[in-house]
Amino acid sequence: MDKMLVRGGKALKGTVHVHGAKNAALPLMAASLLAHEPVTLHNVPCLHDIFSMDKVLSSMGVGIDFTGRSMTLDCTGDIEPFAPYDLVRKMRASFFVLGALLGRFGRAKVSLPGGCAIGTRPVDIHLKGLEQLGAKIEIEDGYVVAEGRMKGANVAMEFPSVGATENLMMAAAVAEGVTRLHNVAREPEIEDLAKMLNAMGAQISGAGTDLITVVGVERLGGVEHVVMPDRIEAGTFLVASVATRGDVLVQNAIADDLPVFLDKLRDAGAEIEVMGNSIRARALNGIKAVDISTRPFPGFATDLQAQMMSLLACANGTSHIKETVFENRFMQAAELIRMGASIDLDGNTAIVRGVDHLSGAPVMASDLRASASLVIAGLMAEKGETAIHRVYHIDRGYERIEERLSALGADIRRVRE
Ligand code: EPZ
Image 1 (tube, helix red, strand yellow):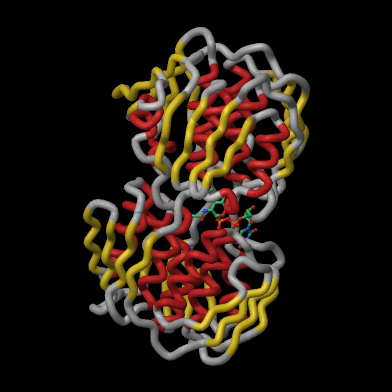
Image 2 (cartoon, rainbow, N blue to C red):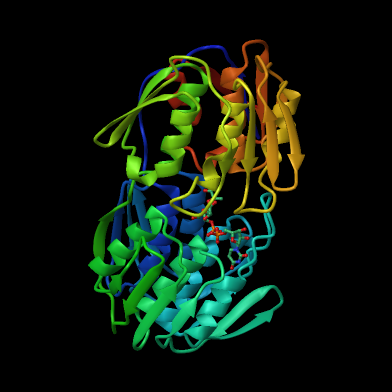
């Protein structure tokens, strides 16, 4: 087990390059199951979650060659449509193979993902939608056992679930007839998946809106696809720049992928400059308190909530952060309080009273984005050293973050516990 040691008080300065999006690459890897020829993905991030999905697909018989940032997935051999518990439990997104397996093979046995640190995270919306597309679904010993030929249908999701939208889009792509998916997620990662599926021969329209129409086709072919940049990684570096009163240019950051988030950073007093696919973030003066409510895209991304909480811990005034997407995503609050933050939790709202400064302390990472918020808090702390334990959480979603922050002037290093 590694830990991260951070000594704060240094303004981050320089340029950082954002890698491919974890939350795009994972469903894109799953979508390769639909292809009758090999699929090659470029700009794939080297992250633990990607390695986990590689294991799930390889265990099914998918041939995977992952060299540098390019990954070729070959599903032309014998594929066993089975995703075991010991792999799925490590990463919920493994569940995103279900729709593609049903679409391609008409049967699948996939472990239920179980809960995680940020909530129980059921899959009822996934299963209800797949049943409406013709799947017969049983739950046996913690597994989803599904079979059936996919047939086009009208499906209305009760909540715009990102994963359910991706599972249903993949199943509908090769269903018989037309599918209309209503109240779907509108995240840029959905558009990236639709773009690749269409390049494979699918007929999907409306991705990025709340109604996706899919005309099912017989067969999907191979493709080469470049994974979109990681908007959450971009947002994380932008917050780190502002939180340390720095001046960082984040390259490969698409402003349209972060609409409300950038507005909130500006409302908090940051100077945000958009130059093509780069965004520069500076904090010329102090940080002002702002109120935030996380929402499905294009609202404020829940995956940037924890990072903003660290920034607002030292704002002038009191901020209210409402987490409407997950039921338990304030795990970082208790750790920030140990560093001197003043935060009260009232249901799904965190009341963050700005304090003058944070102080270094030993803290525990609990989930991916909470660990990013603790790194930012450590960079902000003007006194003492912050030791962040269980940094494997951060390695799930950020590549060599300590090297990239050090290149921006941070005093951060990884040590073996
Ligand atoms: C995706 O998770 C992302 N993960 C998450 O990023 C992200 O936080 C989330 O979307 C919301 O934007 C990947 O793309 C791999 P949801 P997903 O289904 O699809 C409830 C990160 O840090 N729900 O949109 O699992 C669910 O409990 C990760 O990179 C149901 O009730 O999220 C949650 O409260 C964390 N029933 C809410 O919807 C369902 O069937 C949003 O979940 C499905 C979801």
